[in-house]
Amino acid sequence: MNSTYIIKNIEDFEPKDIFECGQCFRWNIENDGSYTGIVKNNVLNVKKIKNDIIIKGTGKEDIKELCKEYFDLETNYSLIKDKLSNLDENLKNSIKFGKGIRILKQDPWEALISFIISANNNIPRIKGIIERLSKEYKEQINRYVDRSLLYDSTDFDVLKLNDNLV
Image (cartoon, rainbow, N blue to C red):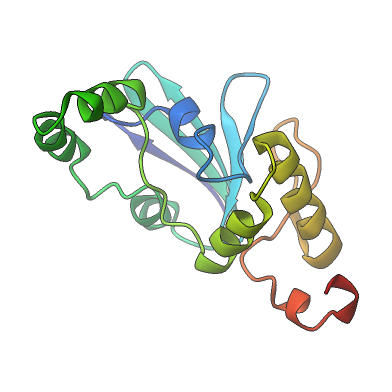
């Protein structure tokens, strides 16, 4: 099922800040400046146009509900940032620097594997390792925009059973 979810006039949502800050590694920038990634077996493409976020998705889940949870859309980030900015000047400067970051509610297993892989690595290398793991052990789910094949990422249980990886 293909669908589109548009979030109008949202503050505190900058795709570049979210997808390139180091908290996730399965999102890739497209030629048009949008980002494509995988969330719970759904392929999402996120693009900001002025103050609106356009999310196109293909998968089995309700894209609106999926995005509300994954992008933590129910949380008022402006209120939190205002409170934290009043506590400390360094915190205030950090908040300005990462003004568009949202805390993603990622799959716990993928977040753990990403964290382990991140030791002594840089972001491009981490992304490559995770993509190769997905390609080797997961099911192909779709093509999207100008990206190559994309693979499921939500459950690497197969790794627990593979003695060759230990």
